[in-house]
Image (cartoon, rainbow, N blue to C red; front, side):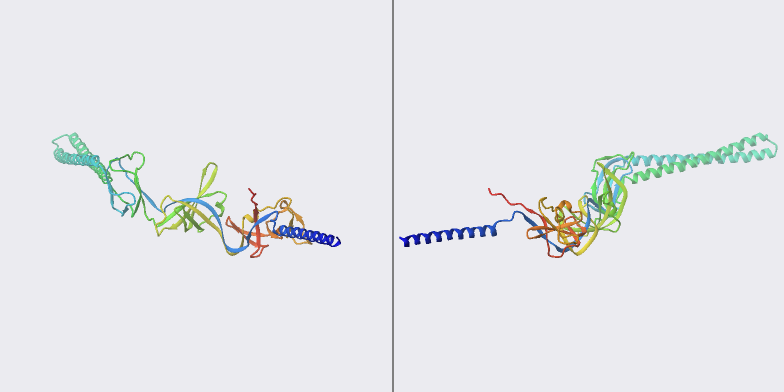
Length: 398
């Protein structure tokens, strides 16, 4: 009986030991495998190049565009160009119906001919008046006629001279009218003023153009599409950092992976206000040797303020990270005995948080320039450190 009792006691002791060992093992596994209450996203402090820029948008256009117009009204009879046509200076590009101008020339020529005939008549009358005066003077010298006859013939001569002068003036007047009519006739033939490419065609054959108060445009010719410019709209808050000679980098939507470079050549002082937003136009010149850039394209421009090479950087999200209000934070900033506990509300200087034993540690830093995504670190961190950029939210079990 005693041996049976001993066996039962040994069996119970062994079973109890197994239960204790299982419980201990389970507890150990749970302690070592459970996820921490808070998990943090981190980023490595690393070296890279930074550009501090002003972001803006602009529109591409040729550096020089010539607006070709017509100085007379009429119907477009012939066109010798189309979109993208290459033209040379002096090349005939359009003809306006010139019937009215030819009639004006003919009318002016007739007026000139009539005025010249009047000149001849006036010269003949002057010649007669001169001969009459000579005869009258001779007869008066012999006392054969009265002195009054001499005065009368003298007045007649003067009148003839005046008539001749008036007739000659009319010839000059009608010649000027004829010259003007010929000029208007020449205006019916329109020539390209420059070498270039037609970027806009504003009329078609058969269309009537009226040049009453302004010169109608028939085409726009870009002198040189290898030289382009971007008209950038810069906000008034950023215009203070823009100056001539400044480097600019931009891309266009059709070539998002291509980077184009240019220089600021002009900061226009005339502001534009739209919806209470004040902007200034900044001209950026760029070379377009490959012909990828076309007039009217929208450019996403970065005006370079400062550049840094091989500097320590951290993501900007590291400065936006805030620990929970009830999270104790060890302060590594200004030196003193031990560390003091505080929350993010107490941070007054630029600071980031590193992770030590799954606890955020505040580190005061000195910042440099930023490119909008990363910020230069002048002091406070070393290369390779991990900084907290956010919190990993644990997914709930479904």
